Length: 391
Ligand SMILES: Cc1cc2nc3c(=O)[nH]c(=O)nc-3n(C[C@H](O)[C@H](O)[C@H](O)COP(=O)(O)OP(=O)(O)OC[C@H]3O[C@@H](n4cnc5c(N)ncnc54)[C@H](O)[C@@H]3O)c2cc1C
Image 1 (cartoon, rainbow, N blue to C red):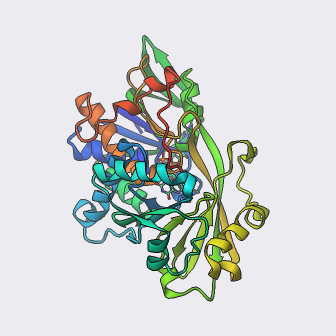
Image 2 (tube, rainbow, N blue to C red):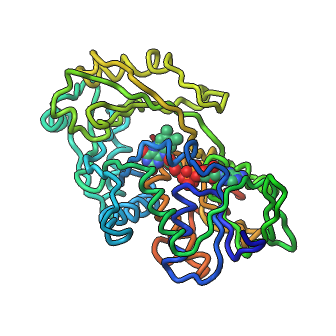
């Protein structure tokens, strides 16, 4: 380990790993340290993610970022070699709307089509025809992604980026960043919990759900912190083949489910006032019984006979201002860059965000996707740019 690096990236999840990778891929000649407190990566957002990728967003930048991720998936072997595999299943997303949500779904669909997505709108009759396992009561419309949407193994994707970065000379350092030093409008060094100090030319915050705490070390208020989410694994012995081929389906209640091997997974983000207060790793099984099961079984009658066989907790990297990512430098600490607050869609956007960070560091500007609207300035101005499709 050296005592100084040109670029210090804090956080070795999908965002930090891909930033390190793209810097090297795009020809950065300087030294890069990727600092990670938990090199098992077991509790980071990435490992706990559901691995979904979609173009069904309301913000054009989110669609473009996900399309960047999709392009990586489509060219995985060219990017990472013939053995690369992340088990990408292109089974689509299906987002449902009631009469009251119909106009928003139509507007989102328009934005998605403008940005090159292959999504179609289906009325209740069309939904019943295409998805015979779905009860269409109360549904006015659904938006189905025919191509470019589905899910993958998040851990494998993160590992591909990290290993490829390491093989190009990025140094991976195990340690917890405990403080950030500043001088004359620059972040100059970080200190690890063991007391060692590492000087930096550029500092990147890729701390996931810990990004707000990391920003605080530099005296910066970043409204990004952990939000506890449960993912339940379900067994449904009587599920039809058609149901096993279902897209990731988001009900009008906000409950989502998708096939996972021969089982299914599902979850539901709580309302703002209903968020769990403890950021621990305990599963609340009552949440499934009380909030999910009945509604899910009403939407998919085959799920009447469902059994929860497993579950896990993950902490969303939640941006409390507007549920969109914050990407780019801090206005007053210009060598401190952020890529945080993806609020449940950062796995698919991690590669695009990592590439964007690499472009900022190498060229001082975006070359692939213009992400200026995602900059820190909107946080400073308290001017939210809301993403409507947060799952
Ligand atoms: C249950 C769940 C389901 C999800 N489903 C999806 C989905 O379907 N599709 C999708 O696109 N996204 C999904 N997400 C969101 C996605 O997982 C995250 O947005 C994404 O993984 C963020 O990547 P990251 O690299 O920023 O964070 P992480 O993977 O959390 O990496 C950040 C790393 O920083 C490290 N770190 C933090 N602070 C410090 C410090 N002070 N010192 C050293 N290291 C530090 C952490 O240990 C961590 O490993 C989901 C998330 C959860 C929790």
